[in-house]
Each structure stands twice: as structure tokens, then as C-alpha cells.
Image (tube, rainbow, N blue to C red):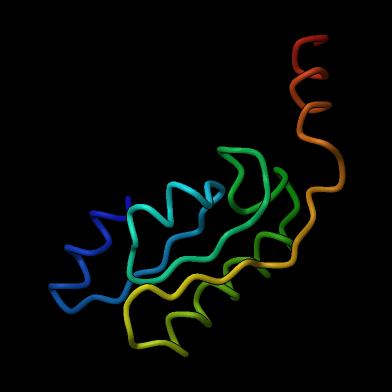
Length: 94
């Protein structure tokens, strides 16, 4: 997605990525990205947690508002609330 974001930016449309993969995001260097330390596939948090999803979205949009240069990367302070391994273990037990 970072490569696509760069092409879209070249067309004059601002972009921001919400990432759960810090290393990959740093390698691709999208114009703007926020990182959340959540399990892959859950960049906006847990299902049905509308308040968390809204806060992450607003943080991402704020980055678009506040930056014009390329390569902005912000770690967001949100916590998943439990080790990721327990999520996989619980899914296997279901």
C-alpha cells in the first residue's frame, strides 16, 4: 500500500497509512503513516470498538493536516490490552 500511496500523492492527493507492520512500513516509506501495535489485520482496533476506531482515524487524519513533507511516521499510543499470542490461542480453541 505504501507504494500505491506514493503514486496517489504524486497526483496531488494526500494519503496516510494506518500500519500494524512497523518494519515493512519503514522499508516502503509511504508519504505519511501511523503505526499501531495491534495484531495484523486489525489496524483500527478490536471489532465493535467504535470509540477506539474513531480515535485512530482522527489521529491519522490529523497527520495529513499537520504534515506536508514525505516520510512522516508516528507511533500511536494505543494498547491492544493482551498479548497477541493469547488471541491466536483463543481462536484455535474455538
